[in-house]
Image 1 (tube, rainbow, N blue to C red):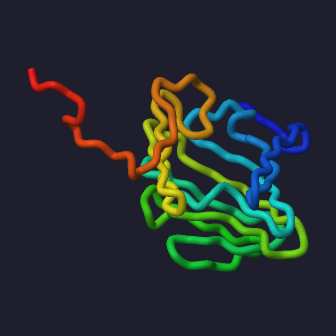
Image 2: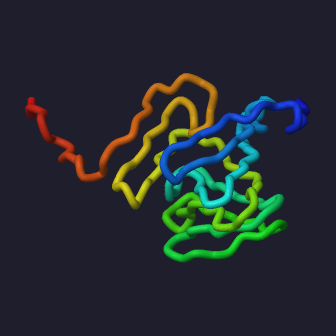
Length: 162
């Protein structure tokens, strides 16, 4: 068992356009291997990671404080302190957290840490591919990258049949 206290960890921060949040990677700090857990705080008027879903990893969100909304598989649902949302590892788990309130929104995001994984970003038409270490993992990856779905090629494209 490895115990950590969130108050002892530093925040990392990501700000890019409407995406802006602070994060503490609790699972990593506690040396978790198969379960990821991060504490997030989103400022008023900002959003989490771009809308996405995972093909190989289930996620869940538990709202600690504040309120906001969750874009969830084609609909928008409200979020308030105490809410828990399970996000399946498929298109129905597509999500993005939005803080549309006047106060910070704090939540825990929990995920399985299986690899390989493909993360799909429907709005931008991209996919992320991760092998050797899952999204959020610490190990070096043998395959990692983001690709536009429209760049799909035929299996035999560019190959000579020998």
